[in-house]
Every structure is written in C-alpha cells, then in structure tokens.
Image (cartoon, rainbow, N blue to C red; front, side):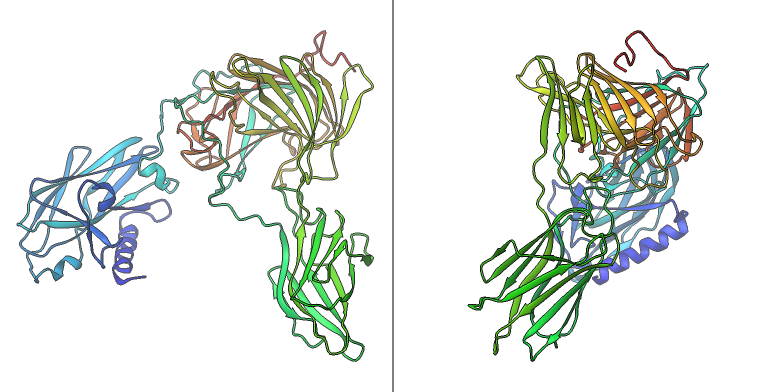
Length: 618
C-alpha cells in the first residue's frame, strides 16, 4: 500500500474511533473526481485514488449521498492540497452551513500539490432522514492556481448501509408499505423468528424466517407484483460474490509413477506412492475428504469419473483401479475408455462417504526401462443431464408438469405423484410445475413450483407485453428441523387435481397438507389448508420463508412487516416478530429479479375447514 493511502486510512481510523462507536459507525470515502466528472482531474501520485480535482473562486462541488433510515452523519474530513496563497472553502449539508476550512499559504514551485492535508471534522454530528442528501463545498476565495480536493470522508451510523445505496445508485421509496395488513383477533399470533445471515452472493438464500404457531391449520400465501414502479426486468443469474463451483473434486498434475516419489497434497486430497521397483509396478494411493452439499447433489452422492492422462507415450500401460465404497469394501473398476494416453473410469453415485475415508488406488505396471509420467489425474463430477419433463396435464389454459431432476440435492429421494380419481402414477418426481397461458403470446407463465423437500415458489402473473418474470422468495411448507442449514420438509406423495389446481401432500413424517392455487388478475394465491402436523409445534416450525438480501437494491426482499406495524429491515434489528399477517417486500428497485413478486402470508384458521370439494378424492 502506498504512503498516501496508508496515511489516509490511518487518519480515518483515528477519526472513526474518536467520533463514533466503531461497532455501528461506518466510514465512506468519496473521491472528488468521481462526483466532479465535468471537470478535468489531475494525476497525483499521493492522491488516495491517484487523481484530484482543481477548484477556483466561485466554483461549487456537490456531493450527493443517500440514507436508508434516520441516521447520524458526521463530515469527518476533507483531504486537499495547495501550492500558493491561502484558500477558503465553505461547507454546507442540505443547505445548512456547517463551517469552513482553509488551505495553507505555502508555495514550492508546484511540488506541494502532491502533499495532502486534512480539514478535520466540520460541523457537529447530525441526524438525517431517509433519502437523498447533499454536501456542498463553495470555494469562497482562492488564488490564481486554486485548490485541489482529493476526497471527502463521511462517518455514517449505519453498519448495514452498502456502497450502492450510499452513492444513490439504489433507488428506494420508503413510503412503500403493506399498511392494509390487519390482524385477525380470534386467531392467536404466530411468531416469525429470524434465522438469517449476511452474504455477498445473490444466489445464496441467506434470508431464513421460521414461522411457529401453536394451532394454525390454514393460511394463504399471495404473490403480487412489486409495488415499486420500474420498466426494468433484470432476471440474469448473478454470481458476483459467490464462491466458484467446480466439477473437479480433486486434481494432481505432472508426476512420475515411481514407488520413491514423495507424497503430494491438495486442499482435500493426499497422494502417496508405493510398490516394488524390481517387479516394475507402482501403486498410487489417494485419500480424500468430501463434505455434504446443500445447494446441489453432493459430491458425496453424485456419480464421478476418474480421468488419467499420460504425457505423450507410445507405451501401453496395464492399470488396475480400486476404490472404497459406502458399503465399506474395495471395488475394482475397469476403464471405460483407453487409448494408451487417456484412461477413464466411471464410478457410480452413492459411492463416497461425507468424511476423509474415501480411497482410490491405482496399480500401474510399467515395462523394464520405462518410467511413466502422468500429465493430469483428476476426479470429476459426472456431467449433469437435462431435466426430464413429464406432462401430467395440459389444456389451453393450464399445464402441470412433473420434473425428474438429475443430481437433485436429496437424491435418491423423490416424490410419487398420482392423478386424482385415477390409477395413473409417476415415480421419482423431484418437482411439480404449474403454468398458465399468456394471452398475448403462445407461451405459458410458470406460477407455481413444489419440490420434494417441501419448498414452494409462487409467482405473480406476468404484466402485459412480458413473457417471463422470475420467482422471488420461497416458502418451505411443512415442519422441519431448525438446526438444518437448508430447511426441508420431505414429501412422499402428491395427489394432483389439475382441473381445480388442488394438491394433497403426504409427508415423510406422516403430516398431511392440502394446497389450492388460485391465479386471478396479477396475483397468485396458494391456499394451505387442512394441515395436520405430527411433530411438536413448539420445537418444529410449520413453515419457513427463504429469500435473498445482499444489499438494498440487490435483494428479493428488503423489508418485513406484521399486521399494521412499521416495516422492519429484512436482516437487521429484530429477532422475532408476532402477527397473523406478514408481508415480505422491497422498497428498493432491485437489480436482482427486478420484477420478482412480493409475498404476503395470512393466517386464516385453527380448525379443519372441510368444504364439499375439499380432499374429495381421498
């Protein structure tokens, strides 16, 4: 780190300690050249970002920033340089005068432009409202050469405020509320418990709310278009900030096949050598660790391929391969391909175990006078094959599809799907999808998904002229263990009535639930009824809300509200809230799933609600 940047950060650190409690205060550095884009910046080696901006008498520098909530703000420092006579600069915030600072009268033939000074904090700490604010620098008097501004440093008492929001690139409307949510007096309140964590990855379902209720048997989920107004429909998968996912389980490169070779280690595997030089065979032994995955079928369970490539050689080697198995015995495998340079072995799914007791052993026979050199040897996941779609029902208005998903994260577990009043049955289904016809195209809009693990997605209907909007927040319907990092309530059987879009769910834990979908206007309703749970409701939640919040403006939800209460931040400031109706929504236009729906949950009843057509197929 260069001296200028080190000095600036040290000064900033001291300011932070002195001005505000470090547990909540956050410094923001605003480079002058990034906000004064209309004027030419000057290269300076000691400037914090290698450039600064010159100003003269009568000039004004306007610095906008945005806040999410009522927040204390302090202008901690302005970093500047001067080579000439004294300059005076007035500073205001939101039109209110804060104070002024002066440069030093000191000339050194231009060399002082690269020597930076600090104003110290200007004005008192102020509590500002949510929204846009402005710091204004008015250059009252300068000499002919002016003054150069490098940066401003603001200390903001909001440790959850992200750069995009602070710099006003996230557009938010704090007036967006679900204030019409009313409590139902004759139903006890449910408890929504916060189980979320921070993330930098928009693919991470980091928002987890567990819903507890002592007696509820009926509730309704409604997916409705977001209340903010925008023509954006950003639905691209964004892997920014996500850990890379590789299909390579482990890999070793460029080594000789000799009993005397030294062991090698990579992150999750160790390679050792053995054998008999006189008999001209070498054993290459691998021991490796695998962890259980909760985002896709785990490396522990998925089928894999061992790929060996020799350096260019005309020798045909004899190779025996054995590997450990979940059954605890050594399994011998023949190569599935062999051209003298490349060898591959297919290893079936559910072979490995979720610890470091996985083994692969290669015995390589070499002719006299020949030393085999392996260019690359790796164990990789089997390539995922496309999903298999099974049409359960289709007419001009509705399509119901069963999906067999390769490498399902809970494989080999899957659902059995039955058609109402029929002997027709489909096995090994991992997902049920429901779509409705789009009037202005020849396509369908997917409004509902139900997975074997109990997770459901519901979507609002697409607005006119659009052929697809992404799903947003998800709901796990059913009871689950609160200690699981990915909540799941496994379903064993689903009975489908595609004519009225009703579903009867039988769970692995013997719970039962009925679902009914109603898609009307822009909204889609999922009615959960006749819920009969088998486990202790005080220990096992009846549902979970799963969603994403990276920052305001990059989220599936950014606020939660219960009954008529004020909205709360999605991630911070609460441990549990109580109510009979909950809204999960966004106030900030999101670059992630922009048109994805808001979600609304209403508790409806604590007794079985059997109507003439409820569960009539049982």
